[in-house]
Image 1 (spheres, rainbow, N blue to C red):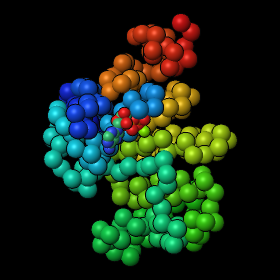
Image 2: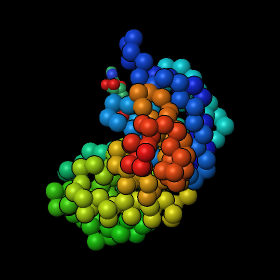
Image 3: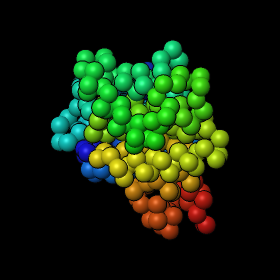
Image 4: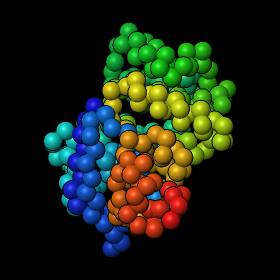
Length: 238
Ligand code: ADP
Ligand code: MG
């Protein structure tokens, strides 16, 4: 698990500022959900936390250490994307082990960690299949498995379920909730789906136009929205 601290974090692309001073504290083991309309900066913020995108100004601390200049690999973070980043020519087993293979893990270590990830994600029976033989939900599970084996302190999810149909989305939502309960990890999860946010989050961060509108538990946001934007976004009566 890990704590994250963002202080006046900003991001500009050229002369356009898209993240406009974000302050945020994320506690050990917390499940934090970023919500907000398309283009408000959710993915950019997540990519800055992961290290895939530079922070223009401000500081990001992980467990008390400023990590602005640390490369993604050194941050103990794993990111799961919306489009499942899995290789079509590899089996599920090879896909899940991929990060370990690159890191030079032994055969035994790979076998153990892949077996554990498969157990947690209930996909032992899928290990010898190729991605073309999997459903969308199963592919998403493989992508999560690839993140799990690296034992990250922090998981980042960028709209991981948005390509799935409604029924599968509900299954996977429960699965991600279960995963959080099982793994010792802090999770930051981006979605534009209110139901996902309300059911998964310990804490919701509502973003609009590169700024934090409100931070609170689902109940706090629902019952005491700071403004009409938050109320409208979470579907609370106003
Ligand atoms: P969200 O994930 O909430 O939909 P994004 O973080 O993808 O929003 O985008 C936030 C804003 O930053 C948008 O206006 C988007 O057009 C802009 N943006 C994102 N990435 C880039 C980039 N690489 N270059 C220029 N503008 C970008
Ligand atoms: Mg996005």
